[in-house]
Image (tube, rainbow, N blue to C red; front, side):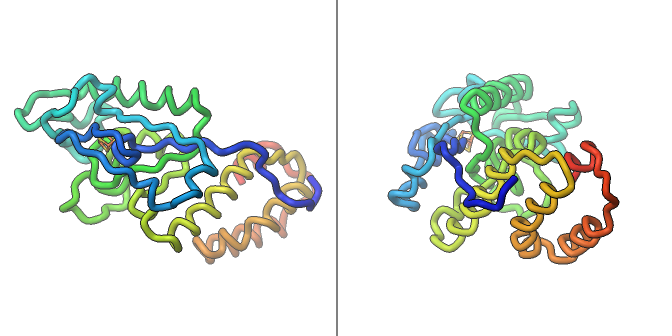
Length: 229
Ligand code: SF4
């Protein structure tokens, strides 16, 4: 790997909660076009809107749903149920709808997803606007994307130019790293040389520890370690 300029030659594909791209698919038939907040920059990406609740066959308008249990990730393990307002169990519908949405994102080659926090489906840190952030992925679809390693961006941050700028540079770093080929210690060093600053911003003690770990590596670095790193 040389140290030339970093270029992503194709427009990145980003999945997005369909209701945040103007589709009137929320339980109450509403939707907003949140992409308008980033103006012409929305043309720098290809957007793939999905709505796991509509793909579940629940229709519009519909009863709002909630998770009866700890979190959406528990619904995947059979330890939580998804109920609508009339207490009808729609768990199997929802899991199928989430699988359909995930397969569409996969086909579109999206590696990132802009999600609506507060949704029991697409939310990542909250499943209700009343709850505080609880620091683990509770939405049914959000938890699936989290587990699959998607780069997750909360849609509300598109309203702030500074936050969007910050998300965008991290996203581009993430996408570039996805494409980077690392097969030996020197290439691993080169990658770290480019990434350590962003890692230090996110978690300085962790980044410094990783830097020390790399510096103490022996000559031979096996593939398993490279993948792990
Ligand atoms: S399931 Fe997701 S895309 Fe569909 S309405 Fe709810 S938040 Fe929007």
